[in-house]
Structures are given as C-alpha cells and as structure tokens.
Image 1 (cartoon, rainbow, N blue to C red):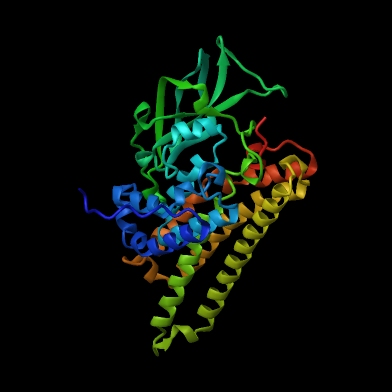
Image 2: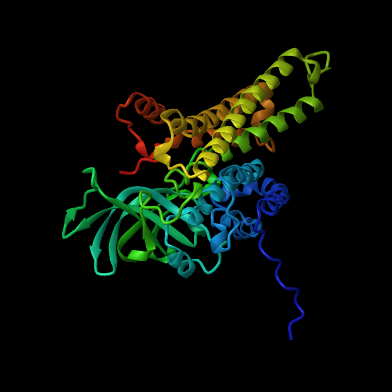
Length: 397
C-alpha cells in the first residue's frame, strides 16, 4: 500500500490561481536566463506553470473549470510575466484551450484534464478538405509559441469541398480551426529570435492529417453564451504580458536607483532630479496603460454578461479593447526603453535583466496586435470603412 501523500487539488478559483502564480515568480525569475538560452521552457517550469492552474483559467464552471473573467485572467498572466516574459507569453497562449468554441462533448473527450496546454496559429493559412467525418488538413503555420510542450495544436485553415473553396453567407472564404495532436505535426526548429526567445515560437507543418469534425471549431460559431463566447475572447488577455514586463522593469529601476550613487561626488541617485523625473514619467505611462486595459475589459465583460452580443456594442465600445491593448504593448516598450536609457551601462551588464526585457518588448511589439494595422482597423470601423485586420474587432466573416 502506498504511503505517498495525495496530490494537492489543482487551484480552481481566481484567488487560488493568482496566489500560485505569485509564489512561482521567484522561480521564473531565477530560470529566466536559462529559459532564454535554451529557447523554450524546461519540463520542470512547464509543470510548475501547470500546477498554478493558469492553463485551466478559460474553462467555464459548467465544465469544472474556474471560469475566470478577462480581468482575472490578465492579472494572473501579468503576474507570471513579472517573473519571466517568455513564461508569461507561453501561459497566455497555452490557456487558449479553455476558450476554444468546441462543444462540451468534445471538451470532455479531448481534455480529460483541464490543465491542458494549447499552441498553434489561429489565422487560416492552411487547407482543410472535407471528407466523411471531418477534414484532411495540410499546411505550414508560424509562431506557434510553446509548441514543444503543448498537449494540442490548433491550426486555422480554409475549408474546401470537392476541391472548391467554401464561402460564407457574406461571400468571404470560410475557415475553421483544426485541433491536432503534437505527434501529428512537424516542428520546424527556426525560432532564433531577438526577444521572447524562451517562448519557443517555432513554425510547424501538417501533411494530410485527418481531423474529426468535433475537433474543429469556428470563431464565428460560438458553442457557449456569455462573455467568454465572443470571438475576441482569445485576444483580450494579450496586454498582460507587456504590463508584467513593464512593472518588473519599473521595480528593478527603483531598486537600482535607491542602491547606487551618481556623479563624481557620489550623491545618491535617488536625489537626482533627472532620475526622479524619468522614473515618475515611466510610472505615469504604465499606470495610464494598465488602468485603460483593465477598465476597458471590465466594461466589455459587464456589457456581455448583461446579455449584449458583440454586435450590440457601439463602435466606440468595439474599438476600446483593441486600442487599449495596443497602447499597453507600445506603452510598455516605451517604459522599458526609457528605463534602459536611464540605467545606462547598468542595463547592458549581466545579471541585469534590462537587456532581455528590452529585447522581449521589441519582439513582442512586432506582433500584429501592436502594429499599425490595428490602428487603421479601429479608425476604419469608426468611420464605416474597411478594416485591414477585422479579426482584431472580433469580425470573422
């Protein structure tokens, strides 16, 4: 008879998951340089993240999950990113499984544990041909963060029947997201990046793999109701990583300034007006961005929870979360750049994390969600024009 202690139950509420994430921060910080060097999370860190409950955050209570709100989700991811950017990024992507528009029956069959990790690429760059019972999937996708430790891989694909591309009622190409097992994909070892190196965001390929119908979904065909069913739900949590990095850089700069002297006379840097001004200015940028993100998400959650659909929101409400998300990502980069310059040569010498944070932010802001197409899409939507990236608005057809 075994005398081993039973495994502790997985955290399954917002306070429990947040507390577990906070407890993991020192560990993530300790292994951050190693994570970057190995270009991915170690198996130990993956399981440590899984044990916090972060990957189950999107599963609704009806399926046994914690059903965290959008603001509760980003607070957890922000906390993990405070420890390490790549770990926070992988957590942000990896929790997507609970937000996918799969049927409840499929969820119970595919995810015997809710602490499941997702990876992949949602936009449709692959091809899925309809066959009896499902699809034959082929293609190559990029930037699959965390694919080396994923339990399921998602891949967006245009659907074809008898060789012809299917169309939506509005005339656009019809696409679905296919979910396959990691052993059914080929990982391309090409993630040699300036920043976010530890996210392991490699390309992957799929070659004529059968995908059952129940293992696929469309962002435009929700299987649930409420705030977690809207097509933009997967994007709401993205600014959390940038906010966590900016907060970490601000705290590091404060500690460095308090502990160091400046100038030939060795006066405390804490008494240097330039240092005081620069720190406070960066703090203002951070606080403005963070409050805007959280305020926008709370407003959206309240509207959707009251029964409104995404299309019921005003144009101003629709663009709010996408613009505050972009502003947070760009604002965090501005904060880290400013603090990097403030600390000067102290930023470039290891073990200072400033150089890694700067590179992480520069790479993060190359993501489409921080690019000019988002601003154009918001402006076009406000004016009744054509957005270049309608998915950012939750428009999928």
